[in-house]
Length: 252
Ligand code: NDP
Ligand code: 8X3
Image (tube, rainbow, N blue to C red):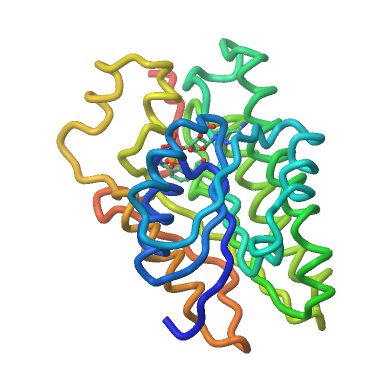
């Protein structure tokens, strides 16, 4: 690691975000850790040997996100890197059976939450003339599968928003990266299957998913690139997951 940065990670209380906090703390970066479950962040901060500021914040709450940035202590106020990681899938039913509240929450978190946090972070980056936004998308942005409906569509938003940000930020020295993981074993699937432990275990049975650390290392690698290099899009797949063919609805 060449430089020590101030890095804000949303969704740092579990999965990719927590693993990323651990990897980036080892490299000596200052961290701002954000999630709703503040007690988890407190425990994590206590284990990290770097300067950490924690903030309990629901990214779907626009005012709370504004407060989060407005109340950053001076030594954490200049965010060099934003890792927009907070997100979720809820439910895996095909669209006719899906729960509209689940759809709302995925849109609110994966799209609107990411928008709110990005909009708060950007002006200071452009004023300072440096910065990096790392968005956590998903292979579901472009890989249709049964039950992905709104979840995959929110990640398609993340993909295109990342590219549109690149266009807007041309000439500002602010970089944008979209990382698109395939299936990983984290609390993500507990949330998606609404705590159904059997469904969780069945899903991961017989193949090897990604681990949170695989994505944390990818994030650290993106951050390590020299100032003139922008990694635009990274797909990270488990070897055991790949494309299926187009589905045929054979009548007989
Ligand atoms: P986890 O469920 O393990 O972690 C999700 C994190 O997001 C938690 O820290 C949670 O914290 C936080 N979060 C959720 N909603 C909010 C909210 N409204 N406000 C603030 N924080 C919130 O999942 P992963 O680590 O696996 O997922 C992280 C990201 O990676 C997500 O965007 C997900 O879509 C994406 N992804 C995951 C894949 C996987 O297979 N696991 C594959 C591809 C992409 P808290 O509950 O404390 O608020
Ligand atoms: C989650 C990855 O493959 O379950 O974003 O859609 S996958």
